Length: 199
Image: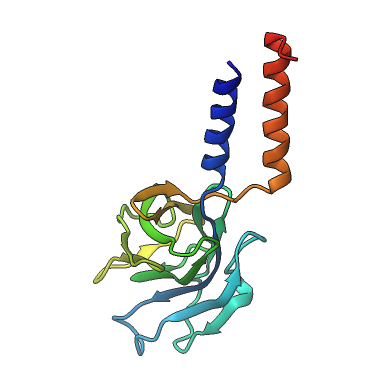
């Protein structure tokens, strides 16, 4: 039984020590390319550390040459769950909306993006499936409703990112502190000793 407890502890530790996204560039563009000069409304946050609130919000305004109203979408990446949240802040109409997360840095060398899965989506009122494109260290989420316009809903879209290390695909999670792993191991050993009277 002691060996089973030890094997379980090692398995739990290996699951908990997967890579995490730690830094990236975040950018959104809302646009009405069929109107005005076709210049997008842009928000951008470069070399942003993740995990301390929204990685891109209203404070990251860059340009709005055509004077569009609305089009503000906050972006959040949660390292614990590997979920990307896009949160619309208004109800204005646009034809296109794009999100880029690029120059992604992981806390494990050689880690790459394997997949991005749509979990839920009511970001806009129309039923438009976003197109997701990935490279090894970037992703692009695109909503395109030309020649018509869609309305932002004040709602959210959630995507889950999966990473790849070698031939293994896994969700991105935080790496536990060594002290946490040690406490887990000691706790399981104590339980095993008490249950089976091991001295």
